[in-house]
Every structure is written in structure tokens, then in C-alpha cells.
Image (cartoon, rainbow, N blue to C red):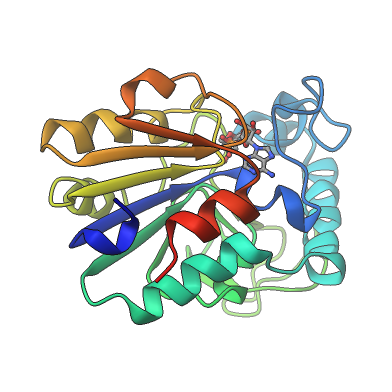
Length: 233
Ligand code: APR
């Protein structure tokens, strides 16, 4: 059966869906991520210790996203599917890029935050953001200096919108995991939740993930191919 044969679908995506758009995945690069150790750039402690480095790291990633990454056929297939599907469709992504939006998806939950948004630790508001920041940047909303931080869920922080994600998982009849290695919780546990309500669970990935055997069906290949085929509508 294909995605269109179900009535309530939850899709989880990870870095693999954006790999063919030129954005590096996390665990395919020898433990380093864009040349940095995760502990140096993606934890609250790192930001406290060296905010300049963390701002710089996300400035670089934001620039790379804006200047060189565009949606690929997998993002577009998901966007096209959502537009024509008559059932319930929720896309949960661990990715902080905006390529699903570019591909036409609308009902998106960014559980690990968004690169093109910034959060103020003083007024706690989140706003769209495309320019550079540093440790002296001023929040345009509250005028506080030095309180902006990337709107990114770092290691040790709680992912966003977990209640809503659990709710949609508990009422789906199809769960599809795309381009994620299954290393990072809670996302890696979504398959068990979906199975607990009898949903059919499918893994679409380049290779078997950590939790591959928890899925009812596995289809391996580049996302641009396997996602386009499975979500044909
Ligand atoms: N098509 C499909 N899958 C691919 C492709 C491709 N072209 N290229 C790579 N993959 C697969 C890899 O085989 C791997 O299983 O994508 C997966 C990427 O895994 P990770 O690099 O671990 O990325 P992800 O699972 O998204 O990481 C989860 O970890 O570092 C944190 O917060 C970060 O959101 C991230 C989380």
C-alpha cells in the first residue's frame, strides 16, 4: 500500500531528507558536524561558555541555508501530497532548515526549532530572522542587549510541541520515518508510540537505521527516489 491508501498520516523527517539539497547530515561526517564537536556548539553550556562561537556557527549555517540550499524532489513530493490528500496529514521534522516550507508543506512541526527564527531570553518572544547575530545584538522587540539566542533545541533541552506530536501519533494509521538515523530521543521513540495504536510504520532511508526492525516495512534508497514513489498521489 502507498501513503494515499491511509486516512491519518504522521511523517517524521531527519537530516537525510535534506542531504540531496546539499545540507550535511549529523552522523555521516565522522563525529564532527560542519567541523565542530556538538558539545562546542549545540548545548546550553556551550552557549554560556562561548556565545560568540555559537552565534558564529549558526550565522554560518543560516547563510548556507539562505544562499545555497533549495528543496529537493523529496520535499516537493511531501508538499504535493499534503495539498492533494483528503485525510489528516502532519509533518514532524527534526530539521531546522526551511526546505519543507519551500517544498510546499504547510502542516509542519519543527520539533528542534528553526534556523530562520531567533528567540530572546529577556522577553521570550520568537521572531523571524535572516541576518547575523552576535553576543551584543539587540532584540528589536524589547531592546534588550545580548539576550538573543538561536531558536534551536540544543542537546539537553526539551523538544517543542511534544504534546501535539503525541496527540497526532496516537490517532494515526500510518507513520513514516524519513532520513533519520534513530539515534536521538524522543523522535526515535515515535515509532513505538505509533505501533501501540496499531499504525502501519514505514522507514524510508538510505540504509537501515538503529530502530529499523521496529518498522513493519522498510524501503531503502535516496530520499528523492523513495519518498517520491511512496507519496505519489
Ligand atoms: N536519502 C535518505 N536518507 C539519507 C540520505 C538520503 N539522500 N542521506 C543520508 N541519509 C540517512 C542516513 O543514512 C542517516 O540514517 O539520513 C540519516 C541521517 O541521520 P543523522 O545524521 O543522525 O540525522 P538525524 O537523524 O536527523 O539527527 C537527529 O540529532 O544532532 C541532532 O538535533 C540534531 O535533529 C538532529 C538529530
